[in-house]
Length: 597
Image (cartoon, rainbow, N blue to C red; front, side):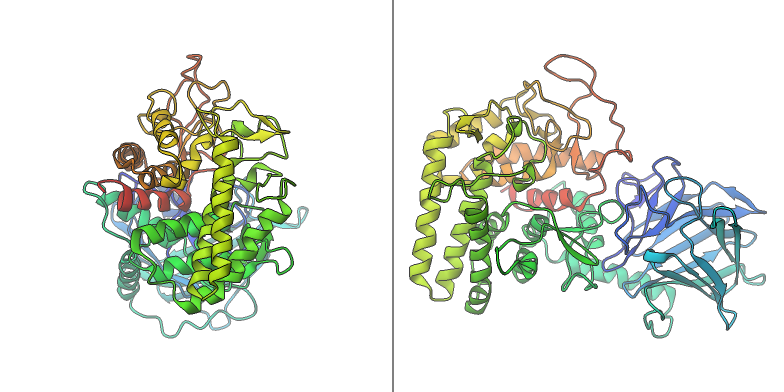
């Protein structure tokens, strides 16, 4: 699936498996060199001191190698030397080598330079089976040799009071030319029990079986997208956490190596394509409500392995649930689930209508920052805050409808009617007050913001709740070539806008996975299947060619001016948006439910 000469490599996606904290990636600045690290501390691979270069050496000299990885293991090869890594979900990995005359060398090197300051100390295990090293908040590594031998070497800088060099060598047995080892990762005083070390091939087979079982949650991909589906499913699977100090149930991380956190609305994104497993889809939609503030109703925006409750994200849960209900029905909404989640969903909606109220005496809201909408740097926020934004309120409308569904499911019929009435009233307000005949406008101090953001058309997710003339106009605007529609999907800012940028900006010009998924789901709900299909195919065809990242530059120049666009290698470390599970789930929704339907 991944490899030096494969279609997809480990520059775009860090390599790991579900419920593990170790990962591998190809160095962005030293192509061809793999690096190994861990994400337990939440540190980014661009700043952490806990990274190892993976070298194959012959007579002490590093030699070039190639690599190949699938869901079972990662293999590196150089001529007559082969080394294979298999990560488990039990806090350790195995590594074996068939490499007579060669050594596997792990060299600690900070992301910020050549320092080995990430190591706090190291010592030989009393039984002679290996070594252990302490890496502070990143935990400890214990290297245990099952066959072959092991050498640890280091240099300590007394003046800097830190290690300047730390390396671990795995040496093959002189007779067999091979070695077998385990690398344990842990926090605290003792490594987690691992039982007996099973045969290496059993770990590889177990990883493949676990991925195959996880893949059953998804519908088959549209014809021609099977390889992309496998890649996207692997990305999601490899970002799944276990239960940790701060996570009371498994979640899907935003990224494994860069922004190591579980984001609120992305749990719902991940739920949407899991149509073959509605129980898991429902669980993911509800996960963040475990971290709800009892007083305000607010839910966590971002969580790490250690917990936390940072940030603010829009009420996406209603949109995801609306999609599930249209796709697979409501059998999964048992009375018990409705009873349990109704008050939590209701409190979440009331957070918005209370703490983001526009002060009109109705459910119209204002945003205090772009993070309230998810369109972090869109041009519809150019006039500042507080901003009354319809693309946020449509999420609230669908959330209210979902709450009505939950109320009905647990026998609260009168309350269900009240929530439906609120959603219908807010829908009418958005149509009457925010539709200007061409788009849905954001308002600041009662005035429409002059914006050409794609977000102005996000209310299409209301589907046939909108009048046909608005549906037709929105569709016309979205399908206009050179406006929002590009060869690779919908741009997040019109190509006719002076605000367009393809640099590090998130949604002010790039063609971004979540927005293309949201708009195509909305078009489909509005009865515009053909148009939804065209847009989804353009985005997913590009992802097939380029690999899945969050957003792509549609051109290397700015169409409005003809000027050369920002240098945009794909990807690079100053770009905060590659290596993300966020786009993979959007791709899975589009190739499973939009394309060909």
